[in-house]
Image 1: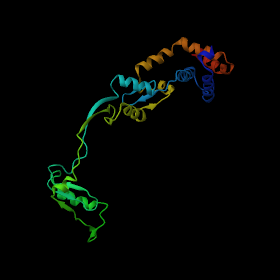
Image 2: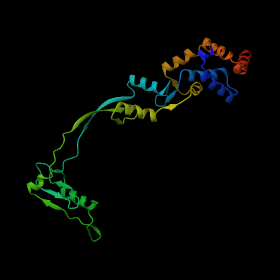
Image 3: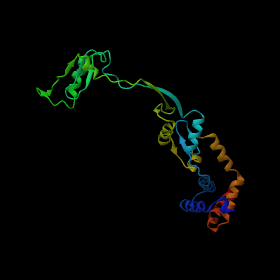
Image 4: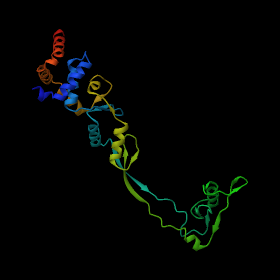
Length: 243
């Protein structure tokens, strides 16, 4: 019966756990067994004050409840055009070729002055300061050289995190951020030993089902088949009789 209820690997883990925790009681040992038998990896989501059976369970439940991400639509505009068909004068940086049209900036002369003063390719100094010279052209043929076809704005579906409000390119991005930053791993023993947070409904039902008296008795009977567990079983039985 032991091999079926308590696999060999779990027996070894339980044996070490009991050796390291001399005052361990029956319930603690049983919870340790349950955690490994059913691969339970509890996580706390502090924002909702709920403990889930696992990170995967938390994601699945929160997605179904619509509490993890929402679809959103954003408008993407490409870089603002500097020169277009309505431009009649351009201001050109002689050092790097940067250009500004007279109709695409509220103060184009200020823009060109600011640019040449910061241009990393401007090595000319006047009185210890960068030269502020630039080119001006009103020649339609010169202006035409600077006109670039501009892409029309597009709309895109993205995903916003319910937790943070941040936008992500995909649902998976929301999930990965959630798993990385907003869940706190716990042990089943820590779950049972605290009273600040509630267990998620399905997780609570599962644990309650596992704590039925006959299941704990079957666990004890399974361990009783191995001599190395007898000292612990005797101690647990003696304590129960005293109570």
